[in-house]
Image (cartoon, rainbow over all chains, first blue to last red; front, top):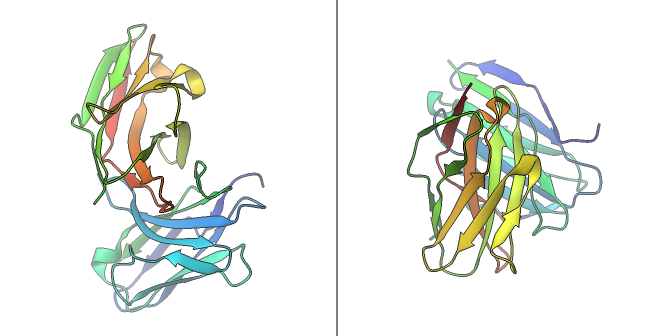
Length: 113
Length: 114
């Protein structure tokens, strides 16, 4: 497709479980971003990749959160030992060049019971 | 530290009237400024951006925004509102120095009344 895609669209899990969220950016976009949007709030930055490397991971809330982009395209956000407070919509965006506008995917709604 | 303020949670405007959605920002350097719109059950859509140059920026769907450095504002405007403009609008800022992550405001819900 032409846009950023994210899977799954919805994920329900139990407290303490491990989850993986996938992002497929626009083809050719070298920069990839993850954000988290809680109800009634604007998106909050989590991590930014330039190519395969994490250029800025200062937004990750703690060490339960980790993201990879091994081949410089698809990225996976991994959350260990999920907590109820992790419930939110996780947004992925890509851009090219890095300083250009970011194009967002539809998000993954994560619910931790 | 960077921050964005959208002082109005809700803006109501009659169809055909001009609309303004307010945004002010705080950054430690020169800003890149953006407006995004979010429709229900859809992702954020880019509307327009200010990088440098002309303070009046024109974007998608007839929207425009004016960068005012002295007032650190970047208000979104449209001369004539449509019912289909009803959505959630987010202002965002990033730094020109190479940090590309966006800092978003809390959003303003625009309702255009027929």
